[in-house]
Length: 128
Image (cartoon, rainbow, N blue to C red; front, top):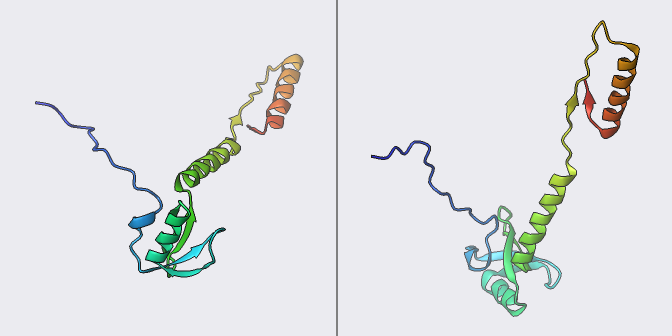
């Protein structure tokens, strides 16, 4: 008999945005480059997106009526992941460096530790 401790069932990721026929509201507010901004029936908005060979993507579902945009959804996801990756790369982790001085620290050792402390501060680390 198998022990199922630690077993966690797979959880399918739900898309962050509803697209095309997954949008279940009677009217949407369209924004974007290729359309006249305004409130449209969902059937008209889907037809316009289909004519341009793009997807109708729900940007703000909590607005009244929900805000949608006509765009290439795959490209939108790619650019969003790219932005997130850049933001993660830009956020640097600040590390705390520690330098200890004892009562018997000699003059040369003191100078060596002082130079290292200056180097750590220039790198952006905190010093303890």
